[in-house]
Image (tube, rainbow, N blue to C red; front, side, top):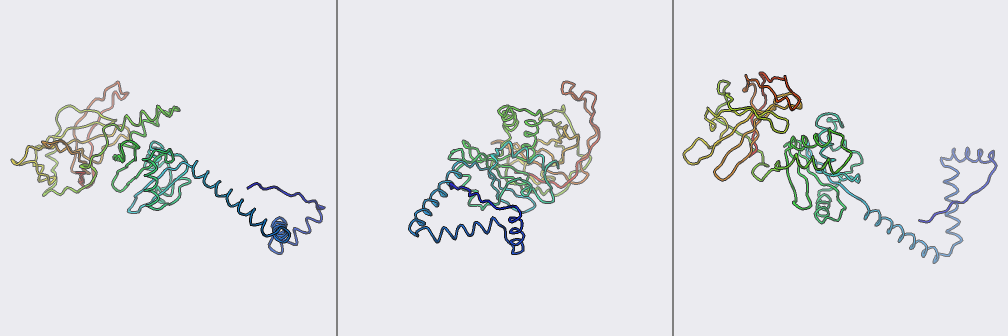
Length: 340
């Protein structure tokens, strides 16, 4: 719209008196003059000419909206938290890595307000319908460059899925994405490509399969007893965590409700307790690997209260800058769960 301004002159004392009078009427000089100018235009310009001009204005406005829509870059989020679902869209050009960093900061309490929820902490985000979210997903796969990133974050299940242009939806555990975001962001790398390479390399091999995405609860016939907690083999380190291999000297079917202690198959369990070096605390989940004859299923079980105690120690490799630190007795608390 090619608008112009009209300049009028009035003594400042006269203008002050006029403003005071119009203020008492609940209006302003500018608003009153604009209304009178519109009225003058309607009275003096022929109706046919007004209609022609209005059609041109409408066409220009529509073209401007189309150009704005064509140049807009969207990011979409589907957030599930405390049983509530939110579909959001932003025009900030956020990508998977940006959202992962934001999610990590929120979980760690350095961004947003958990009382409000993650969805209400994202600046510039607007609520959209599930149908609009699906449209953004279609645009993302068409690779028009219109959608910079699309993620689904389920805080209740601890999962994050991102839509990859080539590979479609890929799902990860929140803790794996958070860890990858930490390493990509911790050095303050200015080069975006470097940050992406670090982020993706940390996520390599962490994608969940159809066997690992749906969580199911394990219900054995009894709890694991303290005297059955026995660790053997060397302690290993992977992705900033110490892994303690647990001997399966007990009946796993009784504890986990699995079906491995049977002549019907050759399956077995590998069970690990983990210690988080970054946060200096015991992880509240066992890493349970169900080894099948036809492959592996990764399970993750949150422990029952005070069932696990490690009476062990290890000297951490000095090359990792932790020489002299020793890991002693620690406990895990929680309620058993597993991802099949």
